Image 1 (cartoon, rainbow, N blue to C red):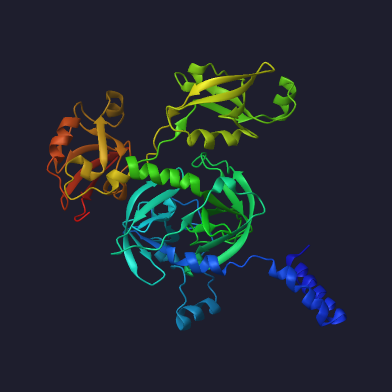
Image 2 (cartoon, rainbow, N blue to C red; image 1 turned 180 degrees about the vertical axis):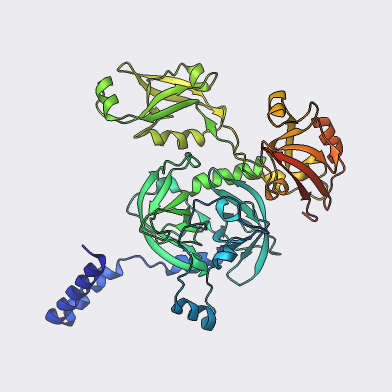
Length: 492
């Protein structure tokens, strides 16, 4: 049925009841309406802890975005006379023009502690040259990117407001159930402190994305749009249970399906960024696929629950525990797997080195094996918390936010470099290198016009780098070389 027709029919039906039954019937509706939740208290208490986030780029933004914060096709404000009137005569906070969007990213965030830590999405601030946040009292503060984790799409910011800031209360996303009321506060299309509500549509939703396999999203029907990314999702107790992150849409705007990152996943990442500067995830060492109908028939199974092992990584915890291709993993650490996509988030949240019981089905028989969980490779696009903000005393390559290692002979030959020429970037550890667009795998052949052929030579050439210093690197990527200047900020 056409939704507009449905709305008309509903309104007409209500008018018909009132017209026939009189005032008494209308009053009879009041108790039912009064039982609906009132969100005003939640909004009044928490709105001061919600912020508007703006990320600026000196050049065009690098890469794309998967969230509702930017780079959604067809999501600009409508190019019509009414929108133009709003811009010119009423000063409405419109989103940037398509040209400005190349240099700006707008989103939302929320303060998680009074000392100025703010949580938002990584895709809102990814590789930004400058990040600012605007508070409800209209103060605009420069934010430091303490650390990011692209895999979880989390970014931790820090501002200095000269005093304690209002902070949200955190809830338990693991206790959410479909049907519960939830509430979002954010800046869709630049309209600050917009409040929308809905219900939890599903939990544990895996979107099957290669870049976010470790997240079991909260699915809601809360209307969120471009600019809501990074904003909080509240339960009826006024506690944050998720971070609004993505929408599912054919048009680029809200279509009734929205996804939020569970707050327990986000805070796990925050604690790791604060304590060690990066986020580590567990690794089981298997490749799995869904148990399809053919496998159910071939294995004589009752149903298609679980995850079928198709490959086991050599020397991994799974291999050492005796996991084999063809095994069906039924439960991980006591938690039943309904589908294959349930496994990666559980493994990812497991601390490396933990021994976990794995219930499997092999040749029709159930058995339990204990597996030592390894550590997954770090996200190369992550900005490490400790490396992202070198202090005034930081010096050398650490201040540049990168680590290097020797260049092997085969790679040197492929690039057409001579023996003893170049070192390869093994890791991006801080915001200085990240914001310059450097990546792991780039080859550095010169530092300040001095040829570099070993890690020792690189360290010697950068040992005097301090806050305020600028270092000129000659960087080789593929068959292209270019000079890139890295300036270490002062007063960090």
